[in-house]
Amino acid sequence: MEKTEALILLKQHITSPSLLGHCLSTAAVMKGLATELGEDAVLWETIGILHDIDFEEIHEDMEKHGIIGYEMLWVAGVGDEIALPIKRHNHMIFGSDYTTPVEICLQVADSVSGLIVACARVKGGNITDVSVKTVTKKYKTPSFAAGCDRSRIALGDALIPRERMYEIAITEITAIKDELGLN
Image 1: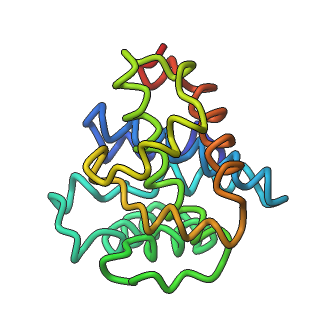
Image 2: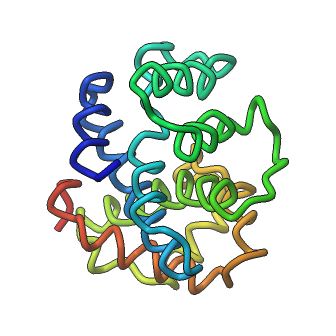
Image 3: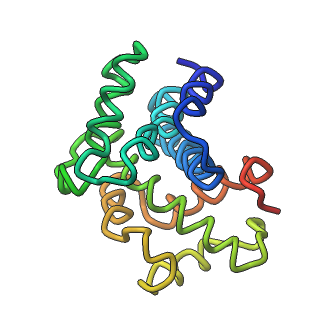
């Protein structure tokens, strides 16, 4: 599945501009992490795009999130290579039992993308003003972007040094800044 195809499918189920932006930023980070780890960047980007496909339909019911998404993807003919990591990404159901690089990186990307976009927003929307130092400092302030689960970001430490992960995430989000309404 190519990015365009995934976006068409996503937009059949998601209308919220902020949720669309979240899916795009998660996808961008997934793409960068895949490249860094020598994995399939197109596949991982697609997983990032589609990871919250069910969120509006389930009305944010975290006991259904991912499970319904998997079913939606299955009906759409999307295979398990994409659908299973999406099903399992709900840490409230699956805990932190993530062992594959794609599952770990989806946890990381889902949270770090929000942290970085929040950093940009406090800098007037200027993603170019966000640095590794900025993100590191804001990570240590739990009240800042409180919905960004720091423990999920920390899962990535086993795969990529934290500063390098922030660097990749900032670079990839900067690359799609116009789509996210950032400067």
